[in-house]
Length: 140
Ligand SMILES: [Cu+2]
Image (cartoon, rainbow, N blue to C red; front, top):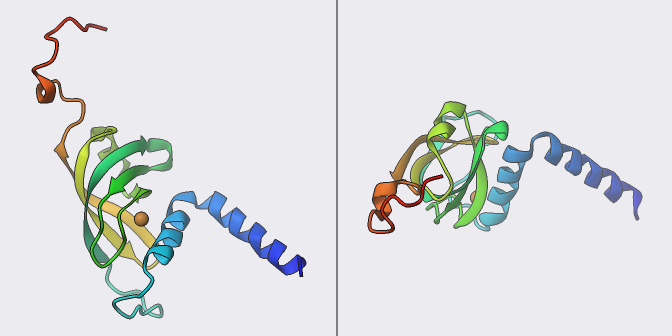
């Protein structure tokens, strides 16, 4: 016993460190689909699949070019969970802040998973949203 297990555990760890965002995603996807609904063809890179996501921004990690989202169930893809999704265009992160309600497309292309068409449904920090509370005494 011992040696082999140890070795592969180290490799997994290395992979996790080097590609944190997407490997985590793949792991979670693997975990969350006990019975695959459709056959997955791994031989040929096919067209990316898209799913609709609705959720709440937990944190924005610009240095990792990803956003952590607490999202509801994504039908046919993933159960409700909190996880980080990468984006291809980091500038979209500028308009996001924690507690924003968003919708987005989850794009899945082989092992690559990312968000597109992120739209803020409800801003978290908009003064207008909570206009009733304490008018203007809270200057910082
Ligand atoms: Cu997930």
